[in-house]
Amino acid sequence: MQEQREHEQATTQPVDGRSAEEQLLRDALGDELRGGLRVLSHEPYGRGALTGFEEAGTARAWYVDTSGKRVDSETGLVLGDPQQPQARIWLHPADPRLPALSPASFPDAATTLMARMGVVIDQRPELLVYRPGKRAMFRMREGVRETYLKVVRPSSSAAIVHLQESLRAGGVPVPTITAWSELGIVLTEAAAGVPLTARLDELDPERLLDSIDALRERMAAVDTGRDARASLASRTPWYVSRLRAALDRHDRRDGARLEGLLASVERSLEASDAAAPDDADRRTVHGDLHVGQLFVDADGSSRIAGVIDIDTAGLGDPADDEAAMIGHLVASIALSRADPARAAGFRRLLDASVARWLAPGRPGRGRVAHRTAVHVLAHALTPTERGDLETAEAELALGLEILGRGRSAGSGR
Image (cartoon, rainbow, N blue to C red):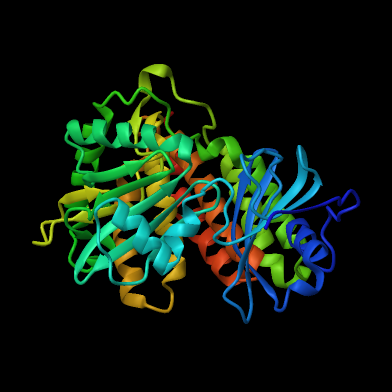
């Protein structure tokens, strides 16, 4: 049930090592919270941010939206003026911008929903990806057969279908759409091939990158009639300020090394090319390209067989896709420290990617370096806010290592 409260005096500054968003949540819910809170996600949105918290000892996840943006229908708690809310709080899966998320999340409702699209399922929905306020992806199963249900904003579903069909017609191996609804639902078959991350030890990095570049060329030839997701470069000040705010909530001795690494990344940003590309250099790009979006042939040929999550695609800067790949590999290595073999597989791909896309003198290298630094900062934010300073340090240190390669040889624009 929707609930609205006036909360004109809500806390907006960190208290006792808590972020402003966590303090808002605690002030609003009080004794309703039964466990500690751990940051799940944190992204800039509107004039504020969208932050997720996992409640310890429960299966509950809370989301705090300080964007100031309106929604068609409230699904939780509104703080302040309902027309211009200071914050909006909801309990997953009651995302006010994704009305199809709730029915897709619960077995009985999901069974009914899928049946309306002619698909039978006999297992619980499996949530694979959730970007609050933006999209979610579920794996739906009947026996060994899998289909994938994407939940998006209702206003976006038709455009996403058109985009995916345009790319497919242009030879981009995106999954086949089998049904969709203006309620914000897109149903697809499984992607061709096997997940790239399942074949790390078998891949030839150079052949794989050749295939990725060939995929990017096919995408570049498609006129999507839209812009790609905004470059992370536009959010640089936000990531820097949030990282510094998160560091300020830790003991200075614990955060000293991370503070030094952050300062070095900031200097790297200042030394690289933050400029937008010339119009002539803009192409259709994926917009969020990384190894988790790619599938390879099952025969071990290192050839790309499929690509997913193309909602972000459109006209943009090729440097953004290259930086996204590199930044994600940096984060993957840091997160795989307990699995040396897996980390080594990611490292082989990272080294090859850096040698190719951050090569000294390569045209556009400066933009790739700048965007890579921003991606590294973005990946380091969540572990810092969770108190996992070791992971954040590993990410920033590795990012600085690769950004330092060949810098003295000239950046290239």
